[in-house]
Amino acid sequence: MKRTFNIADLFELVADAMPEREALVCGEARSTFGELEERANRLAHFLKDHGVEAGDHVGLYMYNCNEYLEGMLACFKVRAVPINVNYRYVDAELLYIFDDADLVACIHGREFIPAIEAVRGSVPDLKLFISVEDGSDFALAGIGATEFEAAIRGGSSQRDFEQRADDDLFILYTGGTTGMPKGVMWPHKSVFFAGMGGGGHFHPDGPCHEPEDIVSRATEGLTLSGIALAPLMHGACWWYACIQMLAGNKLVLNPNRSIKGEQVWDLVEKEKINTISIVGDAMAVPLLDTLKANPDRWELGCVLSVGSGGAVFSDSKQQEFKRIFPNVVITNAFGSSESGQMGMDSGQRKTSAGLGNVARSEFMDVIVEEEGRPARRAQPGEMGIFARSGYLPVGYYGDPEKTARTVIQVEGKAWLLTGDAAQLEEDESITVFGRGSNCINSGGEKIFPEEVEQALKAHPDILDCLVVGTPDERWGRKVTAVVAVRNDRKISLDEIQKEIRTQIAGYKVPRELHVVDEIQRAPSGKPDYQWAEAYAASRRGLVEG
Image (cartoon, rainbow, N blue to C red; front, side, top):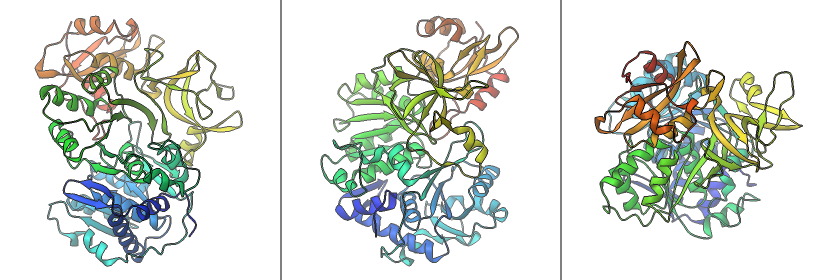
């Protein structure tokens, strides 16, 4: 069978080259590459034997576990498409994703049987259920589910699947921070190069040229252990998992359902983890607080890098990590479900503005859209939308209109607009400011919430925060901060304003301040701006003066 840049093909090449090497760890569950390959083959045959065909969509609806990635690989082996399902969804949201994604099967945690039972009658094509044991005791018969290990035992271990292709689909559903989630349709080859570095993250020769190159990328050089602390249902973690496995590295999953610093550092020490992947400050804060409260408790000389992607990783938190780990590489990556990796910085920024600064290239640029004129690439000093070309998704599943707004032709070339505002600097680097849809227009001035949040988080009494625009008679919208404070500290608006005026321009400084016990975020750490705006509108937690 001809090998392609299909992820199943690439994984099989790696597994054949190092079957005895440890591949995957989650809690007490451990698998070598050979064991993971065999189990994925067996599950793939079970899916195929029960009617799952090439192109069919299979839900992955569970917390972090080895079975999540076994399910992913099994789908890819039979050219089916795994769909990430948010385990926090309530009935209406779950029905939406089951229906929008056209699921025919679902691999799920046993605890989710009642939720599935509540909506399955409205999704007639969803007929096959495979249940992963999680300590709950809901009856499999309620939805006619097969126990996961029984499915493994019932499938053949043979690798006798049909020819796969570069353009088989990997669909990643977005987090829904700007509306209902949409499935981003990535051809395997495109997501491998745009989202996973083309196999070149850990090898001096860089990305693969041919599929077979993945073997040298995985077998030559240092073998690393890496942990992604986000849930696998989140794209940043899912792609990181693929990066690690295709590099022949040991992937450690966070087996806990929240980020607790002591649990994480215990795990890092136990598994001798080299690379840690987080999602912004929501994960950085508890990790840093635990280290500061427990100096010298853990032996962490194994740590080589800490990287963040998918949410704001503020300068203040990056600097704290550097003080604790002076010889460790700290990176802040930019990208999205639609764009893949869009570059990163490591604190060596060329400007203090925005969230970070990355290099302009043939495939990375700022696109300017002006009414009545064709879209064009920015000139130095101009603001526009952060965009990429080259390896791109083919669009949003079932939404051609959104696809047409997101992937556009510019000067004869396809470009994907990320939605993040950016500026092309005079040295032709790109400063990223954040999601343009969250931009606050106050008296004609454009203010990006993420930039204000960075300044606020540098304050020692502020644990977490979100910034939104609220109505103002004079300016139309005003900058309003919703903050969680440390240890019930007392803060005032005047104090906060004075503090952050040293970091950002006066027109960006919050004019209103609300205190809340805890900032509401998704499990991945992504912000819930709709919640923050509603909280501010309620006038709860308003701080005077």
